[in-house]
Image (cartoon, rainbow, N blue to C red):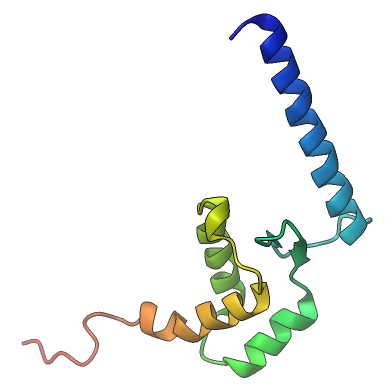
Length: 113
């Protein structure tokens, strides 16, 4: 790629970043979000609020909800855009509902010895 092509591509990346920053600032102008912000299949931003985390913790008292949200976010970020979800809250609820099965001790219930 020649220098002018590289410069054009760099300008395009900057424009995309500017649009994303504007979206994040519209959602959280004070930069106080402590939970992940998910990008949907439609490129909408869905912030996770303290109230939603508390609701999930009430609904799933045996699960470490904050840890599971961070795990879900890490998995989600590693997926290609085509794997994004439209309904982030449903995705998280399903992820957390499966957490007890996924985190089960593989040795539990075995009579060893």
